[in-house]
Amino acid sequence: MSSSVEGDEGDLTRKQRREQARTERKALEQAHAARAARRTRLTQLGIVVAVVVVAIVVVLIATGGGKGKPPAVGSKTANATVTEVSTLIGGIPQSGNTLGDPNAPLTLKYFGDLECPICKAFTLQILPTLIPKYVRTGKLKIEYHSLETATREPETFKTQQIAAYAAGKQNKAWYFIETFYHEQGEEDSGYVNESYLQGIAQQVPGLDLATWTSDRSDPALSSEIASDAQAANNEGFTGTPSFQLGKTGATLPKFEPGTYSEAAPYEAAIEKLLQS
Image (cartoon, rainbow, N blue to C red):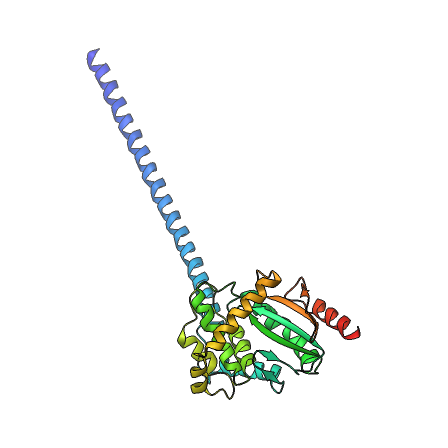
């Protein structure tokens, strides 16, 4: 009796051991399968990340890089910018920060920050319509004025805006302004340094670089930046781009087009003034 019970207990123990071994094996198999699935997911994720990184690199290369380093002078990209800017404004009278016939019946005051991405949108999307239609034909002149909004460091803002105004002493401010906006870097990336400004200046057709460098220390240009800020404050401007538009020689009212990518409101306002 006793031996039979012991045999049953021994059989039961062996069955239990087999079940335990089977359970452990299944657990190991499941763990192995889970690890394999995880490796597959990580591999797939790695592929996706790699594709995204490659795409970002391609975009940065195509756009000249996130830091906004100007293309090398004489490169295909730089030459394309020079050609585009020259086609747009070449042959139009310039005086200081003003583009257009000084006797044009209408004046548009454009308050901008060279690092402002919305100013870039306006400059690259709206001005290519307004300049040929109204500035080149002597109906409108555009004055560029400085208002710090996007540039983080006040000294950097002052330096870059003065660089544009210094080009204006050779009647080439608008070449500098247009080129800067065409090659504007990533906001808040700290891309504006002396090398960057020199690179922009070297793309301005006919700019005497030695004279430009010397003119940047002219205290009158610093005073002009300060006067721009005061004028913007007097008008209640807090953002860029901001505008005044009206008859030349008269007090210019604020102009709020409501868009920086569609030319129609600008054209409508100009046409209305021309007919009045």
